[in-house]
Length: 463
Ligand code: FRU
Image (cartoon, rainbow, N blue to C red):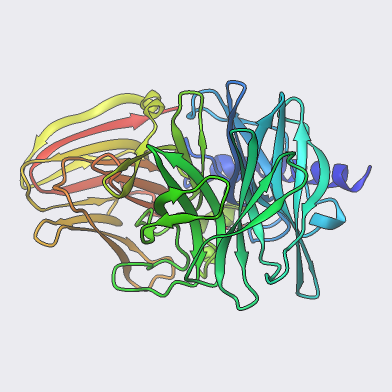
C-alpha cells in the first residue's frame, strides 16, 4: 500500500469504529452534516456539478483536534438528504503532508477540479502550496500538485483558493498575510487553470490574516466574503474569537479595482466561520458555513466523549436587500417537516413542547417585545425600544451565561428557527439577521417558554 492508500484505509476504519458512538450520542445532529469521527471544520469545494450537489469539508479523522486535514465528501440532490462519498483528498504527499487545507471546486470540460492549499510545517516553519486535483466522475481525484507559490512580500499564511470562471478567463481569490502581518485578499488570473498571474491586492485594511475568501456577483453587485482574524471586540461587534463577513461593492473585471462599502458581519451567533458559496443550476447563490470556530472552548464540547466534534450549517440562499446580505434557509428544508405539532395564537406567558429536531416560526403581533426560551438553556430576547435581539446560552466552562446582540433595523415580522439536537439557527425576517449557535441543553429538557403575543407554529423534523 502506498501512503495515500494507508491513510484512506486508516481513516475509513476510524469512521467505521466510531459509528456505534455516533448512534449513541444524543447531541449528534439528525439533518446537519457533522463529523462521523474526529474533527471537521470548513466547507470546501461546494458545487452543483452535473445535477448533484457536492460538498467537501476539512476533516481530521484521527483526533478531535486540528491536525493534518483530509477532504471529506458528501453529495445530495435536494440539499437536505446527504450521502457519504469516499474521502476525496488525504494528505499523503510532501507538499501537503500537514494538511490538504481549504479550497474550492470548478467544473471544466466534463472534469471536476479541486483547488486546495497544501500545508507543510517543519519545526514550526510553515510552507504553503496551492494545489490541484482532478476527477472525471466527481469521486476519484488525481493530484496534479502545486500550481502557485507564495509571492514575495507575503508570509506562508497564504491559503484557501476560491476559483471561478468569468467569460473566457479564470480568477482566484486567496487569503494572505503581508510580511508586516496584515491580512488581505489577493486576486489571480489564469487562462489555463495551471499558470496564474498575480493581479495584486483586491482588499485589505484590518486584521492580521484573512481566511477563506469568496468573491461573486449577486444582483449586479460584487460581494467579497471572508473570515478576518485579529479584529478587536467593539461593543456588540466582533464578539467571537474570529469573524466572518463581507463587503458589497463594484469590481472592474480583469483588474484588482474593487470599490466597496464597510465590513459587515454575516452572522451574530456564537458559532459561525469560514462560509463558502456556490451558484446552483437554478441560479441561486447558496452558502454553507462551519458551525464552529478554532477557539479556547473546543476541548469542552460534550461530543468529545463520543469522539467527534463540529458540524456545518444548513444551506442558505443569499440575496441583497438595501446594503445587506440576506440569508434565507433553502426552500428544500421544508421536506424535513414531519408533522405540525403546534399552530396557535399565544398571549402573555405560554409554554410548548419542543422536540430536539424541530423547526418553529414565531410571528409576533404588532411591534411588541418578546422573549423565547428553549430547554431552560437558550434564550432569545427582542427589545423593540432598542431594536435589538439578544441571544443567551450557558457557557461551556460553567461560568454563567454568555450573550450576543444584533440590531434589527426593521420591525420583526418573523423569527424562524432550525433546532437539531445540539444546534440552533435563527433567521429573523427571513434572514435579515441570523444567529447560528451550538447548544448543549440538559437531555431531559423539552420545553419552550414564550413571553409575548403572536402566532407560533412548530414542526417535528424527520429525515
Ligand atoms: C479556516 C482555516 C483555513 C484553513 C483550514 C485548515 O478555519 O484555518 O484557513 O485552510 O481552516 O483546516
